[in-house]
Each structure stands twice: as structure tokens, then as C-alpha cells.
Length: 301
Image (cartoon, rainbow, N blue to C red; front, top):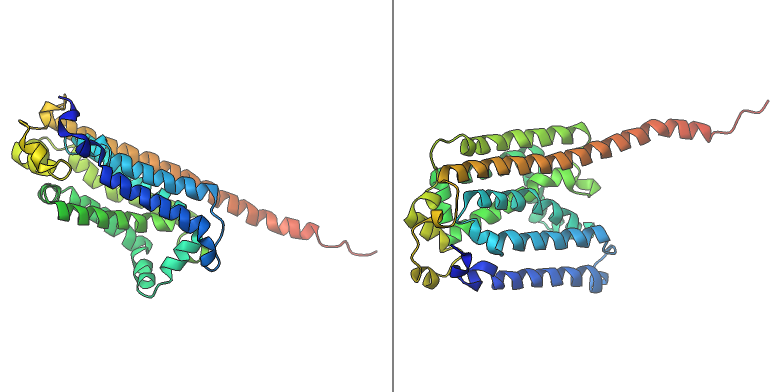
């Protein structure tokens, strides 16, 4: 059955699109036209604006386009959403915000100690992976997926924790670098290990775990988060199997596998970036004494 039956608003989320466009326009105004109003501001770089714009585009794709609706119908699409939302977009968001804005925000009396605490490597790892894993406990998942406000709060908190989790690895502020070299490599491996149990639980389950993807009533309640209730009332829907050729169990297992695969790809890219940056730095340090020695004047005879 075609998704058109849910209507334009459910498919394309026009109000969410407008909100993101306002945020993007505000970003460019603050970082270009009104940049001179801030002290120690720097010109916006190409890397920064491309990263931030990419984050906004991806955010709309996973939360405002038909993919968001499909995420309420097919579990594997939901897991792709989760992977992009928490493993890709936060990195782009951190890269996209200029350093002078980060410093201005993080210097606030309340924000500074809180951010310093939540971005401590061990705390950031445990909190993000713990909250992410709890989200996929069946009872918690079904409750969150059927309550609009609880869903908005939980996913927003998880996004903030994702930023805290990625911060020690990808932030470019020297005064906030809590990890370097091999410690970053260990951090990435620990992150991957902590996320594995949630994926394994989903992949190796022998029955469908979530009522919001298997029970027609719970599924209809979850759909109300993105489809107007008046539209749902006019439709005769029996369950997600109307739109998915896979069985519920296959859909669930595919979702767990895709989540793990995307995680490994993202972590692999960041690991390569960290390793080469560390290797380059070590090479520079090793070559420094030779360069300094060659600059010393030869002794007179």
C-alpha cells in the first residue's frame, strides 16, 4: 500500500521544515553578517558551513521526510534513523559550530560545569550507551513510542548525550581536549563494545519484541506521533504488514544488523581520522629535534 494515504503533512512535515530553515538562516546571519557583534569571532570556514548545513539536511531527512513515517512502520528504517540521528548528525553539528560560538556558549556559569561533567569520557560513554540501550528495552520502547511528549523529551536528551559522547573525540577546542592519541582509539573501541548488547538483543531475539511494530492497536497509537488523528480515523489499517514484505522478526533482525553495520562504518571513519592525526603529530614531534639541530650554527675552527 502506498504511503500517500497518510497525506502531505505526515509525509513531509512542513512545519518541521520551516523550523529547520529558520535555524539555518539564523546560523548564517550570526556567523556572517552579525559576527562582528561578538568578541574574538572568526570568519566562517567552508568546512563549518557545509557541516552544519549537512546536519540540518540529514535531520530533515530522518525526522521530517517520508523516512520518519516509514520509521513507524518498519523497524529497520527506525534503526537507520537512530544510527544517523545519534552517530552522524552530532559529529556534523560539532564541526559546524565555529569555535568562538562554542566558547561563548560554554563559558556561561551554569552551562560550563554541567558540560564539563557530561563530556568527561567515562561519564559520556556510560550515559549515552546506557540511555540508548534502555530505550530499546521492549516495555520502555513501547511506552516512549506511543507518548508524544515523552518521545520528544527522551529523543532530545539522547541527542544531547550523543553530542557529549562525540565531544571528546571530534571537538576542535584545545582547552576542551580531554583525550589524545591512543586514548581516543581506546575510547572508540569501548564505545563500540558498550553499544553491542543492545544490537545483539535485537538481532538474536527469536520473537518480535516490540508491540508498536506487532500489535495493531499499539502500532496505531505510535503512528499518531507523525500522522494527524483525523487522517488515521479515516483509514482502515490492520498493521505494519500492509506496507512491509518482510516478516516482523526479519524486519527486527535486519534493523539490529543495520544499526551495527552503520555504527562500525562511522566508528571506522573516526578511528582512521584519529589514528592518522595522532601519527602525523608523533611524526612532527620526532622530526623537531633534527630540525632544531640543523639550524644551530657550526662551531668555528
